[in-house]
Image 1: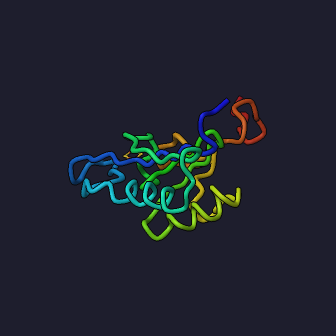
Image 2 (image 1 turned 135 degrees about the vertical axis):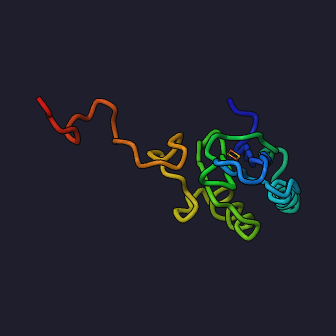
Length: 129
Ligand code: FES
């Protein structure tokens, strides 16, 4: 059993300016993580909801990146103005915010193209023999 109903990991990774993959907290302020922590506390959601700093979550091209476990909800391009909405809609309401959701097919693509729905789905492949 999970110790938390929602464990929110907020990427606060920094990279050098101009890095090909960018990073989620270029200014190094941890402002997004601090906003989540403050909002969770303000609403009295502790101890069952926790917001933690995370290193690179390997979805950099979609950052700033946030993942919520155990639900496995990945949000990208999360801004400070989204924090209250994520708490209201997803953490409290159980609803996915489609405008922030990183689709499963895009995870681990390094910002690339959508993967086929199944690795054994050969219908999309062209027979070249
Ligand atoms: S730098 Fe945030 S996901 Fe990689």
